[in-house]
Length: 271
Image (cartoon, rainbow, N blue to C red; front, top):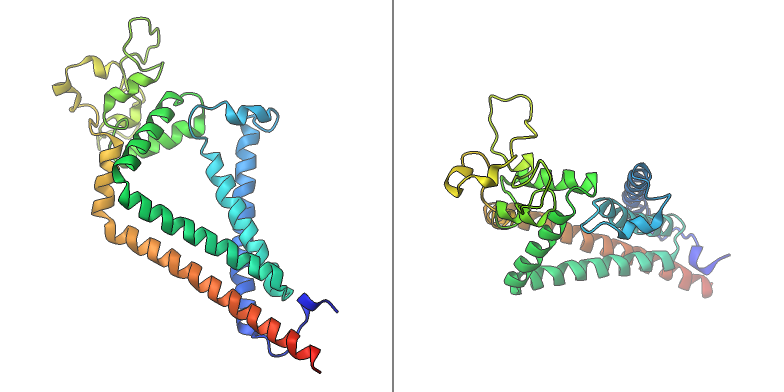
């Protein structure tokens, strides 16, 4: 009989199977996200050329699926198997891992509040790096287009940030048809148009600044993101608090189950 897998009647079945059921959903969702990430890399030929993972100058959105899915898979596995088998090692690992994530989230939030200007500069640098790689990866391209359409913005701080991209810059030596333009996601939307005009941004930055605002969104994505945060502060705070409470609740349940298991194990040594 294994000391970590002893089954006793004093272990709370409600807590045990609640942790098991909750974490098996996380486990399956984590596997699904990792599977989607691997499928996306397979479609782009990354799996046949692993070195190409580091070739992209900007962010490959697939990494978000892989990292989030991997963390969810590990947490779900530890919580699910730990609860089902009453394995104190896996349950303690689950608690510590979840605690580390909570601490990192809390630290990130505090640092973001204290160093707001530095965060703004890093966000600007991050967006500009991805603007440079806009045509290098279809997933990155779709992510940038979605961001610019959702927040009605263009570039990090304005449309001229697209000078950083070799296809959109206004230099004399640029042979691209998109020279001095912007992606279609920068264009203002016409409710009467059912079909998206993907060429609406061509040559737009060759026009005077006073005319550009009639055709494209001239505000940058960084200030628009700041405005969105201010307008939705209650929602964002509510989500963070909800996630934090859920993590604390998970840690408490796991520790409670560990205490029950260890109490039963200890009683066996005296009987």
